[in-house]
Length: 468
Image 1 (tube, rainbow, N blue to C red):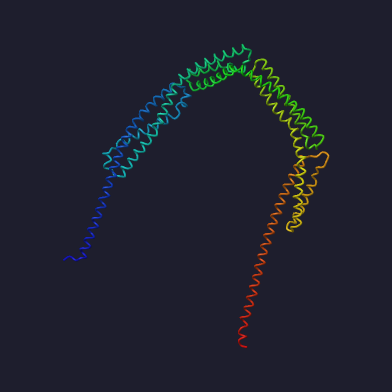
Image 2: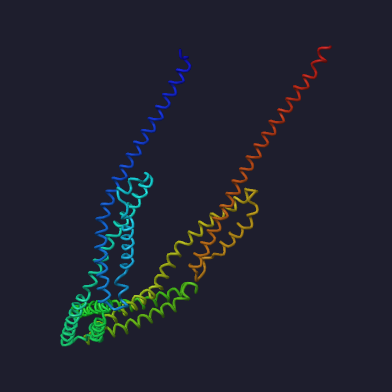
């Protein structure tokens, strides 16, 4: 009879072998399924790449053909600019097509005998190739579209050249018509001075296949001719506007002359009633204002003369110069009046300001006397009071501008000293509180020590009491 122990061990071994076989079988099934998925994915990617590389090859051939056409249509010094990054992208396309050729040996049948990891790496290589081709294809198509547009530049330049010739004749006709109406068109028709030469130069550039340069030159000339035509057509309106503008400058000039007379009166008032520090610079200021006023008259006269001659463009420039000079003159001639207004305002407000500053200084003096910790500030506060007393407003010709400056400076110093005193007082209060706390703690410690000494003495005395 077989021992029970042997039966148990045999059963355990059978179960273990069964588990190992089951695990091995499941692993093989998973590996087979993964292999099948990878091979299916390979077939999908390979089919997609076949389609994409056909499109890539066709796009590269079309673009390469356009590159050659560009080389023949444009001058050598413009080819690089027109091509841009075409050749770089064509080189990239050749590289991808070569990679596809190198991978052509990979098929489902050839991969069947490889390990799962090798199949996975191959599929990944094909997927990377697919991504690269997908990214490059739209770029090649964009380049193709751009070159196709560039290859039509010859026709566009020819059309632009014809339009420029027509514009040139149109501007000449407008200039002749305006001149016949009595206008001076030297400004508006200035482009005609070299327009014919610029057209001839553009024609030379076209013959040399320098189409980009010709297109740029013609575009600039076309814009200038269009502006010239518009300004010539607007001469009648601009003359009316300039007439109104000149009349307005006349009125402003009269107002400025009145302002100059007022400036003299204001300066005379300041000179008679106030200290030199207030009005010493005004003589030069008003002189500069009158100088700008005189230049405004000169520019206005030139604008009127141009207007009478029909030279609207020149008249507009002179009118603008007159307005600029007049604005500067008005600003300078307004300084004496503004100064007088400021001084009168200060004469009414500064006495009260001084009283407020004085009240603050008096408060500082009291705080310094009452606070022993602030005694080092005594000399500073005394000096502040002395400086404030020197601001004497009861003089015959006061200098209110200087008073304002000095009071402002003293006020700032008072604020600084007051802040220092407050901080000093707060610090002293904190020190007193700390000292009081220490004193209380010392008193408590003293009382505790005395109590402990009494208790010790009592305990030491007890044995003697019992003996008795």
